Image (cartoon, rainbow, N blue to C red; front, side, top):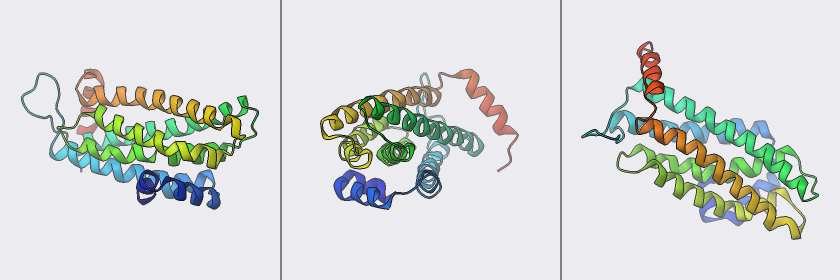
Length: 208
């Protein structure tokens, strides 16, 4: 979480440290990405259980049981991991279109750390009065700002190709995370009635 904050307020020095560390995919996944997602998901789950979330045609926020909130957050973590792994693969491919020789580890570092401000902003979703789209908008703007320094430092493209690779990476992440936000926002707004019924029935079998 601290590194996610540093990427917002001290991006240049933080990306330099990330580049020098040369962490592998497994290390980043186990010791940075998963703990960050678990922390923000726990905060959001608490808010969904304690305060709930506004839905259409209701007079008060809908609260979620602890099992319902846990199932939703597990699903969101899995979706987030899918986004990171898929986006890293695509960013690596983008780099090759600029005649660069990039590794998957480079792309994964860029995406995993670059999206961490977005993941951190999910803590705002714990509050019922904050729209899921607002938290996403704040997070993706901060992430794109961080990537401005991260893409050229970690991916090491040729200088003439650096801005093009940054732009393509930013657009890609904007689109992928926007689609994911559409899915999660509509669920929280009660528009996926079948999915909500399935999760409620599954949660009823859990006892905690």
